[in-house]
Length: 220
Image 1: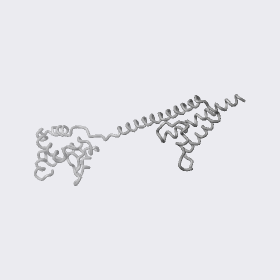
Image 2 (image 1 turned 30 degrees about the vertical axis):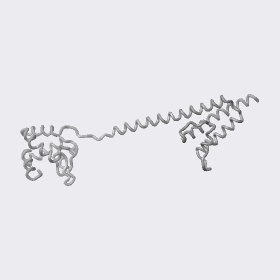
Image 3 (image 1 turned 180 degrees about the horizontal axis):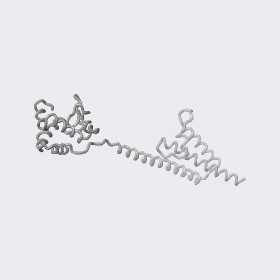
Image 4 (image 1 turned 90 degrees about the vertical axis):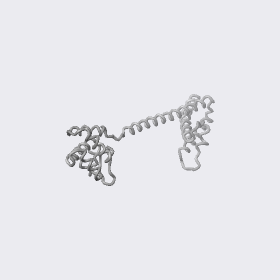
């Protein structure tokens, strides 16, 4: 009979530890403070009669208290149960913090991968090379083509005239005309400059001829 009673007492103690841990963690999650098992009942009692997580925590704590009084647990056993409950709560909070840190790192990595590509290459260096390849003097670039396209677009391959729709470094109108020199005409300075050189050569013979027209009429 004594053995049965001791077995029942051990079983109740284990169950009590589990209930105390659940009740303590439920209340602590809302208060942010460490709550002793013997105070969980009053802190977890809701204002309404509808079953909630707090109500269940209070009921669990009352059941634990019944076990404590009926079995007459010693102070050492009660303290042991409280320590177990605190360790379970700390472990649960620690796992939550680690999970949040990992998820935050993943978000930062995804944001870093979403970068907008920027056109590469020095447009002026490309234009000077193309001017010389045509057999023109370097002065055709420095004295005429450079100021011409500085006026038109600031040598910006993404420049777009909001009123006319002219686009790119040479301000092609419409911009789709430059597709004859490459499908990447929207962002590639070399493609735009190649088209612009051919346009100037076919219409004004040289960059200085195009610059003279621009100075006289405001366009070329």
